[in-house]
Length: 117
Length: 112
Image 1 (cartoon, rainbow over the protein chains, first blue to last red):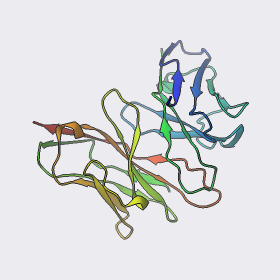
Image 2 (tube, one colour):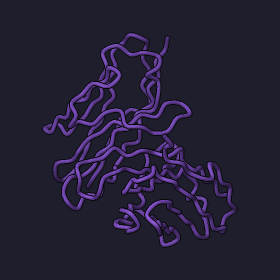
Image 3 (cartoon, rainbow over the protein chains, first blue to last red):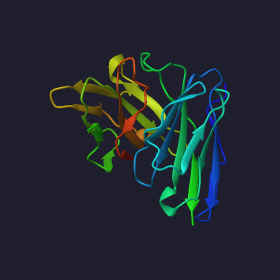
């Protein structure tokens, strides 16, 4: 079946532009995660949704970062007034479990590579 | 502080040699530990988790709570094992979201 998809796969933005990154999780998956992966580093957690509720946004690096999942399926990560330090691969992952359930495997998308010039 | 440390950025071995990818963690509580793998031009995927206590593609990992380590081992490396390997942890409990804390990753290169 279809896995997690993300679009666009590559995005080049000029410093100061706003960008929107989309994630289509596996159908029926309750949980959705966003991670940021800088070059040469492991992924770092940004935010977590359970259905449409954003239950954890502790990893968002600044108030320029905003995420939503209004209908509990597709999610969008928006970055306002992009800076060079925002250049990274943004990964989305979904899993079937609820918060507090026994760990459910996270299925990752291919990522969006954002380059801010 | 919650942290996962993978001390080696690159591990290069010959085909048939044993492999050990090191992982140490710091966590207040009892975490779940995982190894994720990313093959060339593929997405990140789960390799194994400590509570399953299973062997996947010949790899095993034992959780050592005393040393707070979760090293990944394989007795005989194959060329197709060449990939980036990430150690990760997740908390447990009713308030836990399942978010993963990753190490920096180790590139395993298996030479013919």
